[in-house]
Image (cartoon, rainbow, N blue to C red):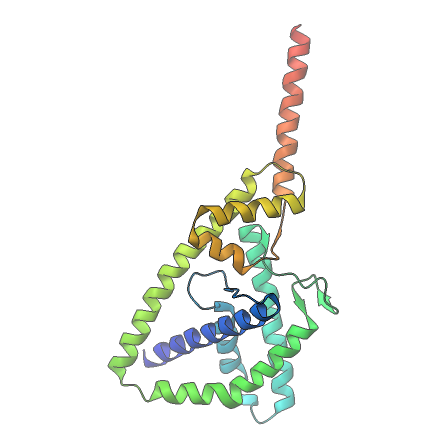
Length: 238
């Protein structure tokens, strides 16, 4: 139980640090605060998951910096690609797109980010994790249980609420009958911003989200076909 609590606290810490890094990187060029991440709270789970994967899988390579760097790139790039793919399939939207960057794979991952992951992985193993692991290890069992329990409850509630909002985002996509990617994207963003503070938070977190419209086109074609048949029936009855 102690090990589970320890790693969950680390997961939250690295999720927060990932959110902080994303927010700073995206806020500086826009000269305004951009609250990144699809969850309501200040954390990006993909960074927490990536950090734990590196800690658990690559700690044994800490005496080989080059191999650690390469393996960090591979693990984080696969995680980012898989996360992008799954979010697009589930929520019908592309939440980040690196198509405009050199050496990208389907716009889901790019060389620049992958190299950054390698550097982050090395910093994690050599600097960050020894520090945080020591601090968490100094906590009493009761303190660790209480802290991890509170964090887990907050995280689960946030995850449920955020997922519901995101699924609502997908439902909104399918409700719009407009055969133009750019216009649909802008329309969705406007609808989300008008709905509530929480949906505005998600819309502003991913300003460059690309909306998939294949399902919308399919629905439009079905409705057109139904209308055509109705017109044919009316003409025959005349």
